[in-house]
Length: 331
Image (cartoon, rainbow, N blue to C red; front, side, top):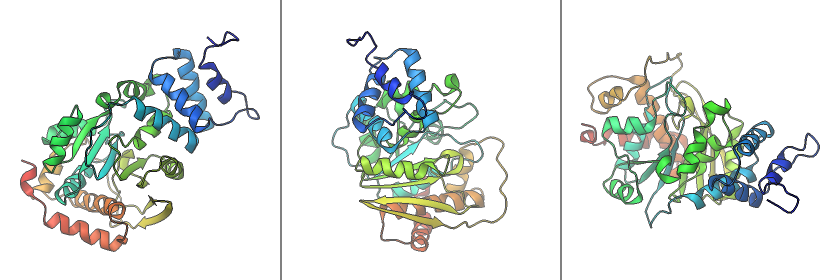
């Protein structure tokens, strides 16, 4: 307790809960300290719920998100020196379409990029999460940095669950059904970049969050990042919609429009599955929407990894990677 008898965390709740005229955002340092206390279990449950929901109502600031990310990174199992080219966050799960973005990961890995995927499963019922999709496809689901390094060296994307990276943070993600709302935790996890990759791909549910992500990435000194509203909240381009890509390279922010390649309405699938991915990859089934989604998502990633490309060049490069893919990667 502090000198006035208040709990040490109470001051952070007080800053956020003073009403319309008295409330302010936390500074980066305050956010880092507050979230560090949460991750170390130094708060009461009532304080945690109040803190997260006050932030939800106020809406988190870039500085708060950056501070939360810094605290989370300090809580993680630190990575060894590990060459990762692309950080790929995957926390939403697929509900309406199959997880075609996984084929984009395979194309990029086949092109020599080391892709580390991190995510958290099971927090929203009725969705197919990337961890399960990786397991069903026989792709590496790693539990420690050594296994991740082996997978990346072998030319495959590696999935690293948040439960293994930072267990207290994973527990916070699973509070959504209890709180009834998404909290800032669902936003900050997408910016974790646990291996410090020079390029980071992030998806959002709501377009208004794009600039918030971008400014937080700038504060975190992320060398390059790309944010967009993806299908079901995953890093996957919807080929039947124009997509605004918010790219940050160094200090230069840029908005790129990736135009749709399909103009008809696309029906939702009954149950997302990896079986169509295997069929498309191995040319044993035709999935026109899936191919368009795969190539467009690959093109978006290439616009981040190779900033000198324009959108048509990135699409052409993606199509080339598809033609040159190693079919045997998926048995």
